[in-house]
Length: 114
Length: 109
Image 1 (cartoon, rainbow over the protein chains, first blue to last red):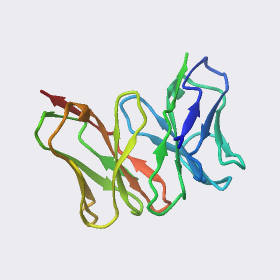
Image 2 (image 1 turned 30 degrees about the vertical axis):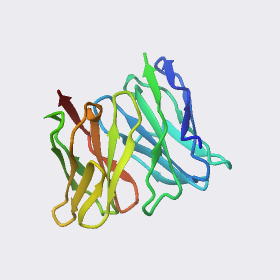
Image 3 (image 1 turned 180 degrees about the horizontal axis):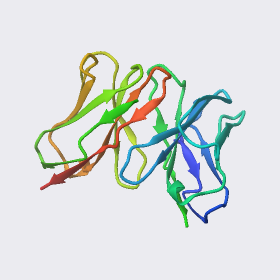
């Protein structure tokens, strides 16, 4: 079975540009979470979606937005990119957003903002 | 505020035992996770504790004390491939994961 997939794997953008990152969860998983991980730090929670509805939002500016599609895949959009947005963006899927189900992570998208 | 503390870096010898500690202060508690992350890769699940006590899984064990806001990950019979960062994460009252910064474990021959 395929795990969580993310695209693209690497991305280089310049300040002020917009970026869209994509995630496909494990088949049967209905919850997708997005995290930002800066080098040397733990992941920071950005969004969680379950059954196409936003279930949680971390402390990120409105430049960050996301959505979940009927097939449970998800997109993360970041507008007006800043140098500080350079990070590894991780997508994780789980069967439910709560309970004992663990989250399975995708390989991540490494975003570099110049 | 919510806070999770782990040592930044630890060094151990191949074949030995190492204990990585994690203390937390979060708004509510719905379980504690340990993840392993090799450099440049995504985190992979190691263990989950929701009740006090020790959970053993092969060479890895994880302990939780909810009253003390404390957990540790115990790695036995260390192998070179165990060199990685170990992340402690707590699921809070909103069922969101709050992550520590990770402990970089260096294994020496």
